Structures are given as structure tokens and as C-alpha cells.
Amino acid sequence: MLLIVAAERTTGAWNWIKDEGLIIVTITSGAFFLTRIIGLIARYQARRIERLRAKVDPLGHNPIGAYQGALVGAARWGLNFTIATVAFVWVLLLLNLPASAVVPMVSVIGAGLGFGAQQIVGDVLAGIFIISERQFGVGDVVNVGPLVPVGWVEGRVEEVTLRVTKVRTFDGDLFTIANGQLRQTMNLSRDWSRVLITVPVSRDADLDATIDQLNRIGAEIARDPEWAPLILEAPSVLGVDDIATETFDLRFSGRTLAAQQWKVAREIRRRIAVEGAP
Image 1 (cartoon, helix red, strand yellow):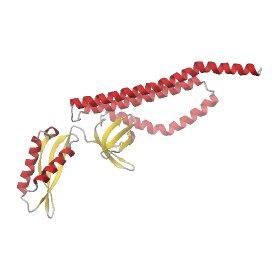
Image 2 (image 1 turned 135 degrees about the vertical axis):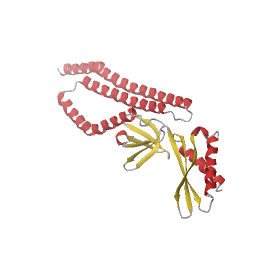
Image 3 (image 1 turned 90 degrees about the vertical axis):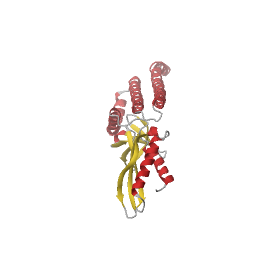
Image 4 (image 1 turned 60 degrees about the vertical axis):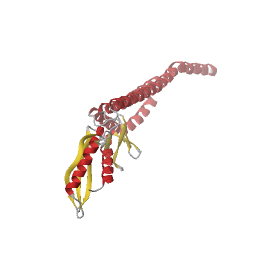
């Protein structure tokens, strides 16, 4: 009798392995390979967008490409989440677990999701608004925050998904920030930027001659074939910004392509230092 019962159980287990067990393995394997394929496609599209941006705009200021890169990251995250959820529910249904085992497990999972879902849903909604409103995209230089405990974070956006945004600072650190924490963002790569330089001048110097010299430097750099593509408006002196005991502060300003103001400002300072005071 015991042998018959054992044989029946063995036969039932073997039949379950051949039927439901094989289907479960197929579902989990299929979900794994689908997420891998989606990842490969997303990386291919990201590289394609980068090549297209470099071809259309070698300076990398094509905002359409930035938003496309953000959409690719969001679509990848959404598809992978959907595949994982469907596969998990499907496997649960195939396991045919008794209600006495399912109810406590579902209760525990539901309680855990109840605590974490609010933040996750908030992050996802924030990600949807970031992408739909085109606040920033992959490749943009942004200043986001304030974040606890680091404060403001400035750097280049490397990846945008529905849940998180990854920002690489100019020091090389990679910050992964939940979209729900991005309360305030400054996009430094939108349309154009302004280069602002404060030039201290000795009170003994000829102020008019110094202003003429700075305006000449601004006009020369705007005509320079190496720097002209970055400059939209030749830098010039706006006037005296401050008067100190021993110096005057002149405000030197112009317009550049987005996120190129620092590079142009460094070159202007170099030229001012080389020429010296009049």
C-alpha cells in the first residue's frame, strides 16, 4: 500500500514537473531573456542617439537627442517592470498554492508594498512629469537639489528612468537620485548661457582705456575661428559693478552656447592675464 502511494506521488510530481514546472521554467527564462534583449536594444538606441547628436551637432547641444535618451531609459524601466510583474503573477497562478499559504504571503507582500509603494509611485509620477515637460534629458548639465545631506548637485545627466536620475558631477562622482527628490532643477544646457566675469581694476589705472582693452579682447575672441562657434554674442563691458577702496570691479558679459560659458570664461581670463593692465 505504501509503495502504491509513493509511486502515485512520484508520478504526480513527475507530471507536475513536466507540465507546470516546465512552464514555470519557460516563463522565468523568457522573462530573463526579454529583459536582457530590452537592455541591449536600449543601449543600442542610446549609442545611436549619441552618434546622431554628434553628427548633427558636434558640440552636443541638440535638445531633441537629450529627450530621446531620457525616453529610452524610461521605456526600458517600464517594460522590464511590466515583464517582471506579469511573470511573477503567472508563476503564482501555476503553483496552485492553497489559500492558507497564499493569504499570509499576500498579506505580508501587501503590507510591504503599502509602505514602499507611496514613495515609488511618487518617484514614477515625478519621472513622467520630468520627461513629459522636458525639464532635462540625457547629456544636459543640471543643478538639482537641495538634497539631504549633500545639498545641491551639479553635473551631467547620464541616465533618466521613470524612477531615478543619474547625474555625474564634474569631480567624477555618480549620484543616483530618486525623481521624487528633484524638487528644484536648473538646466544649464537649455538654449544658451551667459558668461559673466568680474574684472578688478586698480583705481590708479585708466578706466576708459581698460574698458576699451576688454571690449577689444571680447571682439577678438568672438572672431577667433576656434572660439567663434561657441559664442552667440561678443563679450563686452557692461560697466562698473562695484567700487572698492583700491579697485574698481568691471562686469564683463556675453552669450555662449549652452553649458559652454565656463570654457569661454577661462579663455577670456587667460587672455586678460596675458595682456595685463593697460
